[in-house]
Image 1 (tube, rainbow, N blue to C red):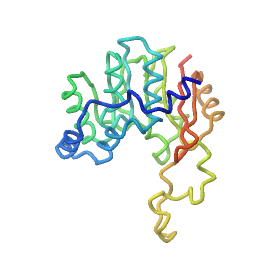
Image 2: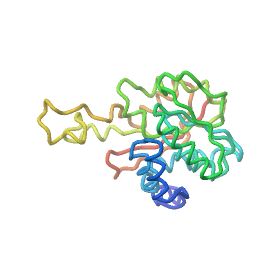
Image 3: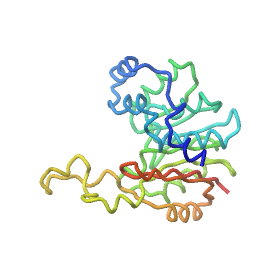
Image 4: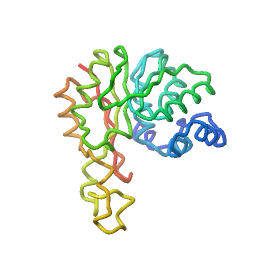
Length: 237
């Protein structure tokens, strides 16, 4: 019960970066505004915070963590504050990578991040102790959890941990779920497809993970979030 409550309370998840500095870095790097928003509102993004905390708790001090789709590096930098020794990541946005490097410099941390297509990466790190992946895979048309795990299993040591989040199938029951949330008031011909391209429940995630050589160690569902998201901690067997 204590763990359930702690997962839902916004304690200890902030990064020590001021809002004026975030806005300055956004302008200097050209990164999209949501990167600054994601950092300044990090405590309310429970799916990201819980995935990172579970990973930090599972790994020994000094571990190496990699994040595909790392954006401007907020999750990695938070993990660095919690004792993760090596931090690396990749993102398709050169602007986000630039912002992340500057944030790391501001926080006096070593952060190795590079630009890459994280669905079809040109570069993987040497096998790491942990991987965190939140808030991006289910936004990409054509992506799948099965393919993602197959791609990144070689980058994770046997016994290593992978923390991720997923939009649940609860969203399938929402009116207009096939359309982009920003477009529902538009005429149907002008609407884009939903930005939530993958939706999986616990049983599906567990089965896919097992098929790719992972064991489900821990999970929780944020039933009141919109869309509803769940967080999973997998271990490579």
